[in-house]
Image (cartoon, rainbow, N blue to C red; front, side, top):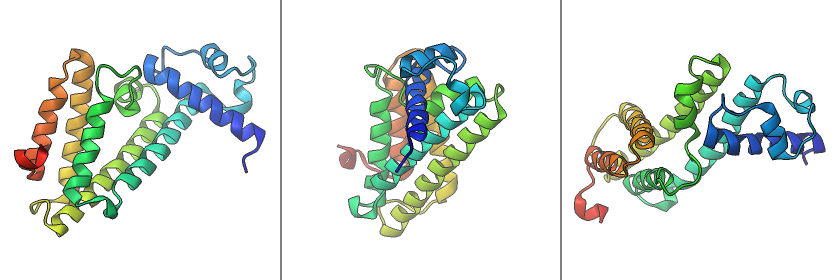
Length: 200
């Protein structure tokens, strides 16, 4: 059971995620975070050594939840390797819709901003992304094994697809054009050998 201190700390992290995912890391001050989380001013450093450590904890918390969701989605009982992978990409497409209030992919939001700003945050993003790529790779290999995906190198394909979707998500933020994601989804289907009839 978590202590009151641990619960408050997690509440500040969750509140910070909401703010940073919509405004960015640099544009959010400590006073905004504490006000939004309804925590007394001056108490921030009781829970975190610095804003940088706070940002690192937000990233770690985000990936803990995100990777757990992927593990559930990629459960072998939920279909073939291809079916599970395409469901993942379709969910990604949904989070990038311009009707979404907040930017759901924290990696897209923070990668360019903090890469040169904070080494601990950059490494946290890198480690979390590596976990995502590893899971995609395992699902591709499962698809190759069950025959739903043609023979291919699991890790290389996973890395390429993840990078492609990150880039497309960034371009989608710039252009506000849903066709950006639609095109990368079609390219993903082609890469994984999914036919149009299967997609529909």
